[in-house]
Length: 210
View: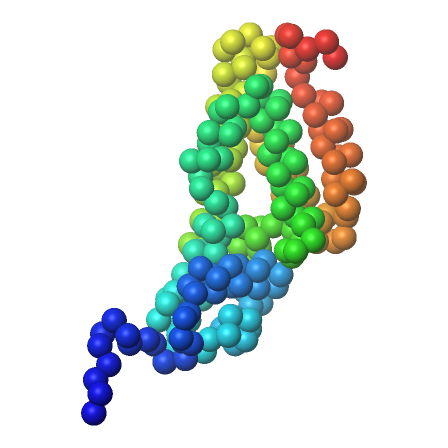
């Protein structure tokens, strides 16, 4: 009898040529479309084309799969930090964050709204770490924006009485609001119009001619 080497073994239900990254992307879109709590392992199995044992073998349980999907959705946190720090001004950083959110939430090839928001919306006590992960991502964004705002204050670009934390929270709240609006069918044009209003309320920059 021909023996199968360990390198050639695969988990039951996992097809030959299994592409873990592609499967993770499919899981991400499935969670994104239906939410964390309402997406079942059966839903994921159908979408990913592998059975439940193969999902558990490759990714762990549903919670671990969702957490990994959230991190894929977020992308490289270092790139986000560098983009915000490297923006010409805090206002430009805020505009970039809002524009990126609109592009993501209203994309033609992906579900509407925000994947992370589906994790924050879960009320199950068993999903506390899912909410914690989503909260940490939101808090990280706010902290990066607050740091960029504080830099503008220290450099005299923004008034000394600018409340960096509150201003960063405004941007974060706007992002979360965009997710809800996009899920309800709001167009990118509408969300860009909201962005314009939000940025009109930005503290006047010293070098600004507006």
